Image (cartoon, rainbow, N blue to C red; front, side, top):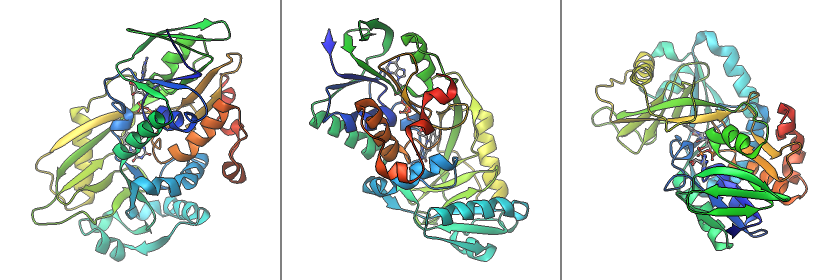
Length: 367
Ligand SMILES: Cc1cc2nc3c(=O)[nH]c(=O)nc-3n(C[C@H](O)[C@H](O)[C@H](O)COP(=O)(O)OP(=O)(O)OC[C@H]3O[C@@H](n4cnc5c(N)ncnc54)[C@H](O)[C@@H]3O)c2cc1C
């Protein structure tokens, strides 16, 4: 049997960013069921950080994370477009950018078209360009956390699917196929499987809902270098589009179909809807889909992350519900989660921004 101070279940961005933070202060083991970290949601994101999604606490976490994100990110503009009937939504998004002190400008249809020449006139009546958003290297982020964890003496065990969890005195006994781990503190960073892990440990599930999102990749128009095209997103329902290198584009219809936890795969209909929305709003002909994928974004009922100890289950710490913003919030959220695990004070910058342990506590969801 292996012993540790903290066992973290889940080797995605949530588990690894937290583990790397606490490893200098505790003996940490991360158990990942797949053969490599980041196989599920964390390997399937479109790797962008911007203010066009989430609720206020999620945006605050994003703002608190931007400086650290820049280590593995490069500045890439985000163009938020609104059709004539969506101006109120664009106004609201502008207020968000103003609140967080973003380097942005409100622009008209012509300027938006100059930045994104494939836009059809009726798709954009007005827009907002955020010059400070970031294209992230999510692979480098994950690897940096693995390296940080190992450098501080922590361990990542892959192929270690947790099949049973039992109380062992005041601590936990965690069973994988080949090994048993014992630790006083257990962190649930299992993404779409977070409720399943809670049930295994005898903690109350919180109603984490995995939602499938589909992404397509297709060739840019012949002879067009698209790498400087902005990340382009509709303020309401619609699509987003971003360059993938110089000659490919990625797009999503921002689908969010509830799903059981699983190895998500794209469905034909969702691929077709994504392609159709791009073709409706732009002059881009999608003659061939180069590849497509889907991943699960997992949400608590109030769409806020869940970080903190379960009520009445001492030593069981939630770190789940990162939704569609797990990378762009990871620097700040992992500091908050580390403080919860180590029993430290809530991070000062996050407190000054109006957040508290209470904001993310599972207690708000009765767990
Ligand atoms: C299409 C798409 C686009 C996205 N784009 C962005 C974006 O641009 N920016 C952004 O910030 N976020 C984005 N996201 C969201 C982001 O990817 C997620 O919020 C984040 O990856 C969640 O990380 P996680 O560690 O909680 O989950 P995961 O990465 O799913 O990690 C959970 C891990 O737990 C493991 N696990 C589960 N059960 C067990 C068990 N019993 N034993 C051992 N291990 C177990 C799983 O194998 C998995 O590796 C996107 C997501 C999708 C799907």
